[in-house]
Structures are given as structure tokens and as C-alpha cells.
Image 1 (spheres, rainbow over the protein chains, first blue to last red):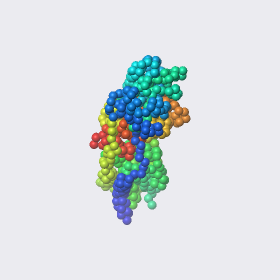
Image 2: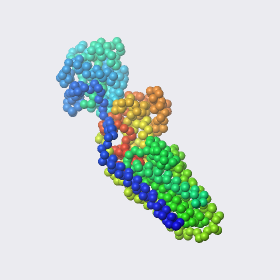
Image 3: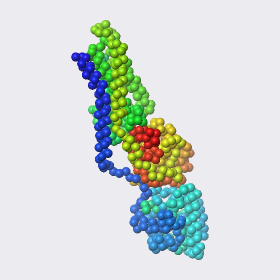
Image 4: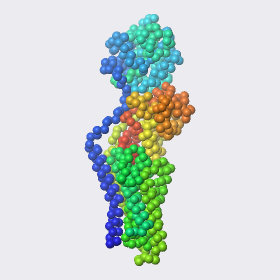
Length: 231
Length: 394
């Protein structure tokens, strides 16, 4: 009797670990197969993408796309920067409407002010450019819109505003050594002819002192802003 | 009824078998690549399952919970041979009781020697739990106690047999019979492990099934590189994410981690720098990420500190914004000029933009071996198995 019990116990105990493990393994495999066949209802994980702020209305995006394409930032056409008349043509809007596009970007933008007839960035202006550019977050494009005040010849002012835009670009290259700058930074130089800034822009972050905010002071400038729109 | 010592040994063996069986069940349940709670209790199978971090979870996810992890997804759980050993000890105890061989010094001596195997294994595992894992699982403690009970009972049976040997009505077991028993024990252990390994589900269909990097090039040096070997293993991490810390520990124990070229992509889940999350899941993660980007050659030191002090950093940042940066500066004064600078912020932004360019999921941790993503379900038990296949070792 004792021998029979021992024999049966031995047989059961010898096989038990293997049988149990294989059974659990099979159950897990069945669940695995079932899970593969069952469509998942788990919420999809978000995918990393650029920011798209509320102000990015379809109208704004359309205009941005036109400006960026025309100025050579998307689509691969044209070269860097837009001439004043081109900007006006692609934007197909009045100057104050063009400026109004940038108003929602106040928290992400700034106005770098220059001395009269100068395109040189002083230390305060350089620091402001650095600060605004470093705060890119999820924005796709950095706009530099340079202007000139209305004193002086139109052609001279056009050239001067281009130099101001290029001065900002050169500083960015030096400060950030970023190979992809050319595909991120859109330069527009408007001279004195189009979209002059009005005194409401005095409230924006500026490199000039509080007193330097006449119409001429404001437009001897380069306007900087990150555009947080997915185009 | 068996005598008291034998009874203790039989109960110890049965308990050991039960604890090992529950632990094996919990382990094997994970072969479905889903998340399960564990029966982490001193009453095996009677307590409910526990989800999340626990001593049992830490132990099970550690590389010490199984063997052959490179060959079998998750490896062969060491509790499976433990089940077989306890089953054999239980069988031998029954044999001594029923045969009867309670006066047989050879049978009881063999019982004592065999019962030392789980004791030695328990001592080894307990040492690992204290020194390496800093975690004790209740089921493991149950196995340690059961092993001790079995060994004490077996040794008591042997001493008793020595005292009562003159009462024996039959001769001691022959050496040949003992050799046969030893062979049988080994066979039981090996067949259970081999059968498990051979019938494991086929996981090769999941290799590379979770996507690849779209644009692995890094012209802006957004990635932090550690080491120069092969394969290239990219970790997407948030230095204040607890899962990343746990993953780092698991990854560091892999042999592969010593020879791989490691790349880190910082992806802080903190909306003060990351526009892809709507709140700070890990407050202070942006500042600590900047610290890592500023650390240069000392990046591993800063990362180790961030993982070590994770809870403190998050708590202090919650209490007072800016504390994470201050803690980093206090610990590593050489970071002071870089941390919070425009360059550091731009560099961190470049990391996030690299994630955008590659359309990475917004979660951490993630791991890519030579550009192929390791599925989330494979970041714990299946890590060794999958990573060796993703990196082309197999």
C-alpha cells in the first residue's frame, strides 16, 4: 500500500511542475492571440508634432503659406527674403491688416530697435534676439520683419531695412550655430513702404527705452516673432 | 502520521512548492505581453493581486528572476526549477514516510543534502535582494522560510534515523538507488525547464513591429551620446519619470549596455518647455534636462543624480517653482552658467524638435535599437530577448 502511494505521488509530483507550467504558458499564449485579434479600444498615444495655437485660423495659415512660399521658406521656390512689393502682393492686404496678423504673437515676439541709419545690433538688442529665439517652444517659423522710418529716400530705406534683417540673421548664425536656421527663419524687409508699425506696438517687448517709441523709433526696427502654426 | 521532523519537512516542501508555483504563475501570465497584478502575499494565492511597484514586482522584473533571457522571451523563471525541486523533496519525504525508511540513515541523509539546494539558492537570492535590488518579495520570503523548514525537518529526520537505526527492519538504500534518485531529481528539474523553453510562444513576429525612426540623422546634435560601441541604442527619456528610472536600472544590467553606443534624447513631460503636453507631469523635468545637456562629459553623473533624487526634485519643484534648477546648481556648481541660458534652452528645444521630426509617440521611456523601436510591452521581461534581435545579434 505504502509503495503504491509512493509510486503514485512520485509520478504526480514528477509531472506536476511541467504540466502546470505548460498549461499556464498555453493560457498566456491564447490571451496573446486573442489580444492580437481584438481591436484595441485604448486611446491612441499622441505623436510629437509642432504647436498649432488657437490664433492659427485657416485664413492666417493661407496667408502665412503664401508669404512663406513666396519668400522661399517652404516649397523650395525663390530665395531668402521678400521685397516690400512682393510681400504686399502675396499678403494681398493692407499694411495694418498685415500687422494685425502678428498681434496674437505678442507673448512670443519682440521689436528690436536700431539707431537712425544704422543696422547694427547693440548689446541690449542682441540679448533680446537671443531671448526670443531661444524661447521657440513648438513654433515652426521665426519671422524677422525689418522696417525703416520714413525719413530718407525710399530706395535707401529699402536697402537699410534689408541690412537690418540680415543683421539679425547674422547674429542668429553666430549665437546659435544652427545648421537649419535657413529653413526656419523668414526675413522680410519692408523699407518704409508697407505695414509701418503704429504706436500700439509700444507695448510689445522692445530693446529701445520707454521714451523711444515715436513712429520713427518703432519703425527703425526688426520685428521678431515665432509663428506657432502647423502649415 | 510521520514523526515531527518528517512532518516539518513535508509541510516545508509543500509550502515551498506552493510559493514557487504562485510565483511561476504570476511570471508566466506576463507572456501575454500585458500588465498583470501579482500575488504578493505570505498566503500564496489567497491574497488578492497587487498592481504597480512592489517587492515582488521589482524582483520579478529584475534579471535575477529568470535565466536564458536572450533565448526565451522573459527567460525561464527560476521558480519553475524551484517547483520541481520542492516536488522532488516532497516525493522523497513521502517515500521515507510510506516505504517506510524513517530509520534509513542513507535515505534521510540524502534527503538532508537535497534539501540544502533550496537553502543555498535562498541564501543567494536573499543576498541579491538586499544588495542589488533593495527589495524583498513576500513570495520569495515564503520560499526562504519553506526551504529552511524542509532542511531543518530533513536534518532532524536524519539525526533521528541515526538514533533509531537499530530498529530498522530492512537495510539502508543502496548507493545505486540513491544515484538513481539523484538522476530522477535532475531529470524532473531539467524536463520542466526544457519543456517550458521549447513550448514558449513565438515572439519573433513582434520584432520590429512598433515602428522605426523616420529621420535618425542628428545634424543639430540634439542627442547625447555615451560610448562608441555597437549597436546604437537610443533612449527617449524624461529624467524625472519613474518608469525611465526603472527602465534605466533594467537596461544597465544588460550585457549589451556595456558595449552599445548609447544615445539619449531628452523628452521632458513638462509643459514649461514641452508644448506637446498640457501640464507638467514631472515638474522640474525641463530644468533637469537642461542640466543634462549642459553636463558634457559628466552627463552620466548628472543623470544618476537625477534618478536618485527624482522624488525630492519633483516635490521641491511642486512646492516652489525653480527649485529643480537650484538643486542641480547646488549639486553641480559647474552647471551654473549654462543652466537656464538661451543656448541650453535652444538645445533642449532641438531635442524636442528631433522628436517631432521622427514623429515619436509622446511618452517615456522609449528605446530604439539601430533605429527600430522596442515595443512598450517588451521593455521589462522581454527586454533582453527583443533587444538582442532588434540589434541584429540574432
